[in-house]
Image 1 (cartoon, chains in turn blue, cyan):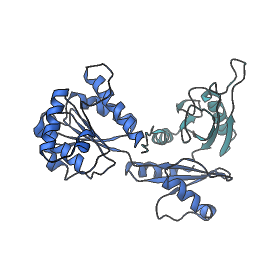
Image 2: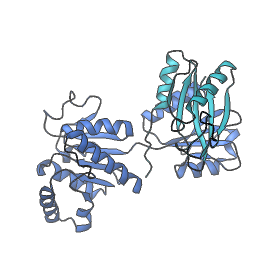
Image 3: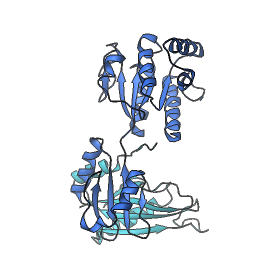
Image 4: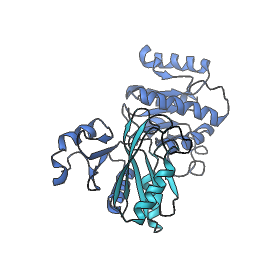
Length: 226
Length: 109
């Protein structure tokens, strides 16, 4: 691979583009493929197969050829509501798992850049904050404040936008009350039951990093089920 | 849904290149049976044999490092190597898990 190609790949990853690297194993030549891009003469004849791999986000060698394809997908967007202690550990886990985290917290002391360096922190109420973030059914929400004023509007947004993962921190009692409020707000049972609450898989730990681990484990497992 | 669960090996390769190291990129291009790492898994190796990332669960990395140093020395642009099920002799390089993998080595230049 040429260093220029490597640099181009890194740039595309930084810009969160979707693309594929196509390598001719017989010549060692690599090129970048993305939607609408024309392939080089050398690879043109495989364009249908390359598109198949690209669209199904697969990696591998095209059958009976020496053409290898590796696809890159956009990192999954995870919105964390509440710049709390658990969120600090979530950020660490998310980094190695390549989730793209944004944190929403209207409370200035919590949402400080010192607590969360190099991170997109939105120091606003969820309704305002969501105007700045593009979300869809491939987005995840982790609500951590267990304060209805902050969590509820975010949960409602996530339900309306059909986020693929919605989790909310809080005891069983907190969660029952939360479900009640969402019901009153007009959400149906199926929607309410789609919320993971109390959040996380049962690991047994109670410390902030352990809770963060249980949340991230649940998030990964739901990501693969989708 | 597929997450990229990206290990940032290419970014690390670029950092190594910036410090004038010669870098070989090793990529798992094919697997058969139960192999520890999936297609697309990567490691990088420099001329001294320092490496980062993985193409197996530690089973074949030392052999990959040797091959990479070899292609830097011989100034070969690329090479494809395959690893099969390890046999009984304890120190032989191979995949203890019984799988097979093909790894593509290429110099970054």
